[in-house]
Length: 129
Image (cartoon, rainbow, N blue to C red):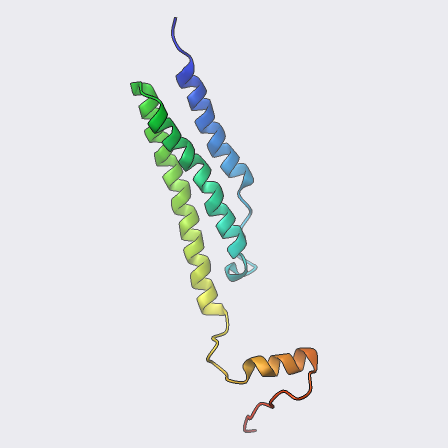
């Protein structure tokens, strides 16, 4: 009688990849990528699920078809991890381009606090008009 274990492992591999696709958050570009770091990190964390499943298959199953399935699962999961890593790199690049530089204006924080909260006693900005 033939073992059905490789079929169940194949179903598990497909399920792990589908769970990743179902749970990954929608990252859209119109709101700047700089504000979506939480979604990018969640995507990377979820992409590690199929990656871990592939290594589980590789280390705990010994027959040739099970090893082939494990290598295929790892190859597909590396695609997900690579896409997730590129998304994080894009978010970091977008943050460095669009976020204000801390040394750009000395009184920038103080001026923002005065304008937003109307606090008295903070130093005035010295700009020449």
